[in-house]
Image (cartoon, rainbow, N blue to C red; front, side, top):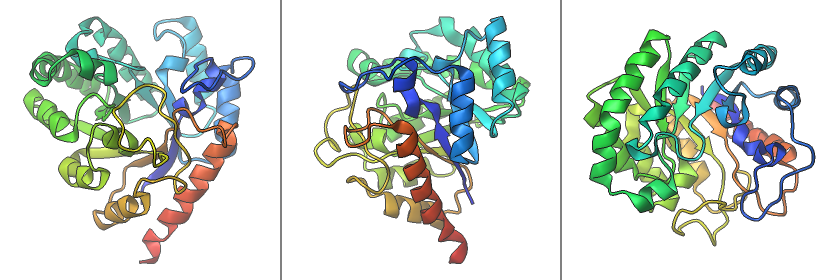
Length: 287
């Protein structure tokens, strides 16, 4: 059975981030506020966006890690919007390594990373991204292994799944996995169901949210509106069925980006989404 979780980008408005025309919400959360909120969700695991945490080398970060250890099992999502930006940000390798160390310190064996975003895709061609990223990812894998951590690259509307698979193969390193974000896949014209077959055993984590029909197949752009799973147009039931058939036992995590106005509270929307995931995956053990 997979672990059911939530990625804390779901709560981006609580950290002063505006997306899709939705304003930030009130006074920014502290790390304690965040940990209390995710504890109440009763998730199996929480993927903490390092974007919302203090600088990895700071004393404040050490305090944040101590607070995170009081909550549910944790892992980290590194890279923010662009991460390694198609290989144009080798200067971030040291930071990536620090978060590998922090992952080990909270007992996490997996860290999700970002190697680009929609802007990266617009500004670079694929061959350039592949050739720049391959040596950086080889180095990153070696760093992660020294910390007892595995890395997984998210489909972040920067590459199709075929392109990402080619990047992974170009590293020549079998230690790196893939995080399939089913909504992001559809935004670069990938069919989410077909993407499952392409990614195959490299998939260690799946990000789940749903998309209204009017945005499902539009070109990737920041601020896409989304809705909780089961209330939009993505074939999520079929995706979960395919995961069950392949005995997927990684992490299924909610990650919301710019919820529509019908969902003013991300915490409530996360609770609804986790309940949907729990109900859907409970059927796995019954078949």
